[in-house]
Image (cartoon, rainbow, N blue to C red; front, side, top):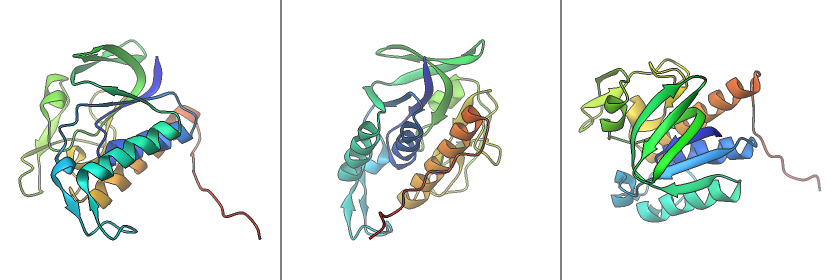
Length: 188
């Protein structure tokens, strides 16, 4: 049983995973390496002059693992509530988590298979998104959504920030108090 499982290791998912893992929550990051970021070249990501999508995805996975997230290569077919947690059915087995974050980019098939409410998207080429409340919660208790699937702009800088925002909300709920993650430069 994981505290948090994140589905999708693009900018939103990897960002969510590294923050959840830094918060010392048992974190599972599931990815099938089919995200659109793998085909992108970014010149508009703050703090980075240029980065290829595959490099960004691998860097995000590496950062999440460095903080303790477990990475599994699989495709999730369905998420369902079971008592006080969620069950993730994948092509590589079954996983359980107290909270799950959908970060599947433009892919809504998993959300639809899981019975989550959707609505029309507003981004070009994004026809459908998951309905979320202001914190990122979906219509299925314990299931959250971040990034393009949650209706935010598909720019990597925006989806990464949204993944971080939702992870902070999940960790705060698990802790029962607002959680903040800041590092400070050492005194000279």
